[in-house]
Amino acid sequence: MTGLRYVYAVCRPFSTPLQAQLTGVAGDPPRALTHRGLVAVVSHVPERDFAEEALRAHLEDLDWLTATARAHQGVIDALTTVTTPLPLRLGTVFLDDSGVRSMMEAREEDFHRTLDRLEGRVEWGVKVYAESGPQESARPAEKPASGRDYLRQRRMQTRSHEEMWQKAEAFSTRLHERLSAFAEDSRLHPPQNPALSKASGRNVLNAAYLVPRTHSEEFVEMVDRTKDEAPGLRVELTGPWAAYSFAGEDT
Amino acid sequence: MTVVERREVALVDLLDRLLAGGVVITGDITLRIADVDLVRIDLNALISSVNAQVPSPFEELL
Image (tube, rainbow over all chains, first blue to last red; front, side, top):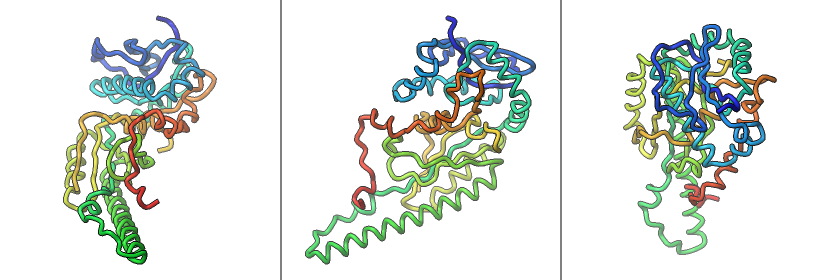
């Protein structure tokens, strides 16, 4: 297959070969393209799906996006077992190998600097959710006897929501401060939309932390210890990830 | 509070990273797909293709 070149990541040369059965986006096994002391991990992708317009249209298609994102992640995951990859944004496509090489030359210094910064580090995701249902559903709603009763009930309900929000925010702020102090770097992602995440409760914190691999166990324990700190809140930990959220130059 | 450690990677967590993270390459040598446009993909547009009806937990306040 000829076609375009899809680049997953840039990394330092590694000696362990990637798993033979690894397939990338569009089913083509990724291969290493070495150039001036750096390696780009590349797949061939068909022009009909990955040229600019086609790709833009595909990105609006959740099934296509899901399959592509998982394939991209699969390659990055495989790379993290043999090296510290610098992941590129989803859908980074070049016309041919020489385009990839030109890019590597143009960004050579950036890549080396960022790879140094990320070497041996992983990313952990921490999310806080405010659970909504239980407190209300546990107390069966009294049938309001009058309009005034109804308004009073509504006011109390609103107030308890507000209190829960304040509590969730205060907790998230404290947790983020604590974890940021331990981590080398941190990023705040926008809270996730429950319709897409299908998670229960409302997402109040969605953060990423850059942590040396060797300190990961300690970091996970820190998150784990928050267990008993606040009823009605839920903390979710994801990772370890390749340092996607810390690959940018603005750090 | 409960701390949940997920085994399977959730799509939203992946998209947070793949669409907003990673190195962005711009310039004439790329097909310019990795440009800022990608960040602006409206996830609400995608949600319309998710057929599950997930009610907002706070809708009784609206």
